[in-house]
Amino acid sequence: MIKEALNYIKFGKIYNSIEIADHQASGMISYVLSKFSKSKSGLVLLNSHIENKVESLKPFIKNTEPVFLVLNTSQVLNKCVEYSQKNDAEIIHQHFPGIDLNDMYYEFNWTSEYGFLSLCRKSVLEDWVQKMENCQINIFDVSLGINSIVATIPYIKTNEVHLYSGKILLASTPPVFVSTQVDSNEKYKLSGILLRSENLLGFSVLLSIFQGVVSSHNFSTLLQTLKHEFYHKIFFLKTSKSFLLLFFLALLFNFLYFNSYYKEAASLEQTLLANNQQLKTLKDTEQSVKNKEEKWKELVGSTQSKSSFYLDQIAATVHNSLQFNSFEFQPLEKKVEPEKEIEFSKGQIHISGTTESNEAFTAWLQRLQSLDGIESHEIMRFIFHEQTKAYQFILVLKIK
Image (cartoon, rainbow, N blue to C red; front, side, top):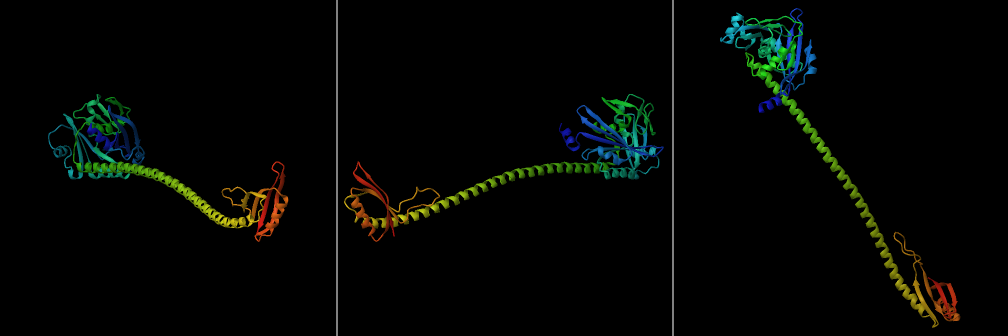
């Protein structure tokens, strides 16, 4: 379970195999892409494409998907050999005398009775790998020729196995590979998977890896380099996506946080402006009240002293027949209201009262007129009441 999880993290569930083959007659190169998905039931063929240019394969392969390369052109020598316990070099020199292994890559895959041997020049394989890398196709593993078919042969019940680049005659011992272009509509059902002949070799490469089939070859350094580069690319791509996601989330968090902060700050600023305005209004009101209080105190103080002066003078002139009901020095003209000036009858004294004698009232007015502080007088009301047998009067004095 842990191993499967690690494999999924490294590779995902999608695997691609690319077989590079050529037509011996025309020399035209073909690229056979087989895309598989790994599920609980096994490998499932998703789609297949055959192109004449390697660049045409790129749209079908994601950067995070591993690619297993099968080099099976005419520059690769394929041979079926009898089983032997000799070492690799002895077997190769037995079938290809005089070949210089220092200049060659080779690969063996064995059954209990025979094996498949594939060879090519090192420069040929390395050039193809570089060409794939230039097209941004990430090669994870490499297989030479047809030798990976060993993983599939046990599941095939026919005497011939048709591939895109030729066919294998299984009736012979060892089998014989005929490297000619075969136009075949052969289909093979392997463990519930229906495959066409052009997908068979690509499927065999993946099957041999998942079954743990170990081939014998001399390009371990190349494979280690490819795997190392692939791991680094995948790590970079996936960590870059994770970093971008985290960066986006951080930006989103900062946006939401600072947006909330700015809204709160704006709200506080508006509240502060409102409070400052209210404070200014209160201060203005306080100053206005203070000014009115001072004015009132000044007025009251002045009024009290002056009213006492005039009251004393007027009282000295009053006849016994006169009786005052009210004595107002500079009375208010209207009720005091907020935000309005206090209005009063400046320079006036209002006196109301009663008298029993018209002559005594007239004599009193003459005495008032003789006072130094009185400028004039005006009788606002003078009415006789039968019930009280007295005159009711309202007198306005203008003072200097």
